[in-house]
Length: 182
Image (cartoon, rainbow, N blue to C red):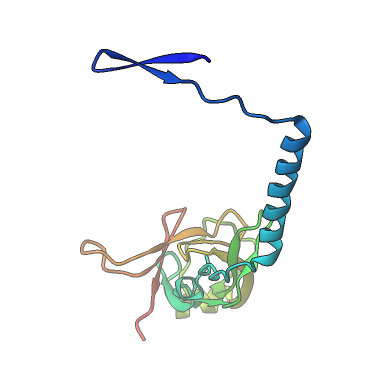
């Protein structure tokens, strides 16, 4: 018989050691196989719990705020309009976004340059002629950023504040498109 010593409150106590377990590799393997089979049976018998669909990461309501007619501070009197397709699409890197269509009018022929700051007045329309244009762009899923992909029309939605009560787009070049009051 083998004895082990345990100390409790510093008083020695002698306890018999547990009897040696009788275990062979074959018995161990059979137990392991039985547990594994039970686990597999559980996995196949238990149906998966229904999952709740994740909320959409993009919101057409956020992007829809860009759908409006605008006053362009650099081109007063010229038409500016953005239409938003409410169906989100996937971008090149898997991000969700919305297609938009920019449209409007300007004076003068195409290609006068990016710095032209002519308004659409009677005088400029008579002198340079009025022309219409349109092109496509995109709004991010959060409905905060807009980009026409031309490195000119890149902007962010401006929410009215106490100091700046206008709603619209602040463009990277400093221009503003302010939503027209209906």
